[in-house]
Length: 87
Ligand SMILES: [Zn+2]
Image (spheres, rainbow, N blue to C red):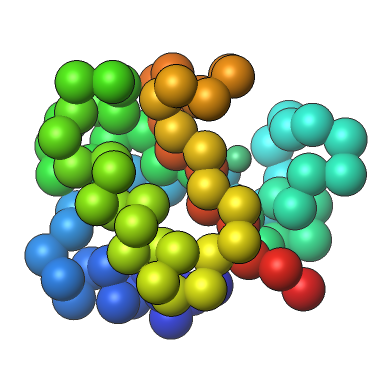
């Protein structure tokens, strides 16, 4: 997962990670296994449906192997995106 974050940075994305491991998440969330992160700001713009960056960001994460991606339009993710990898 960390090399995926580095890849995204190298592609010119700047973003704020608001949760790695820990925090408060759904039971069995992959956050507890350190396999997920949430982002609430991309390239200086808060994540919401009108943010033009999050779709491309999630697409790139899937190309990097992410198997669970949520964002605006998904329940509970109107203001942040969630990206997770499998064990
Ligand atoms: Zn999350």
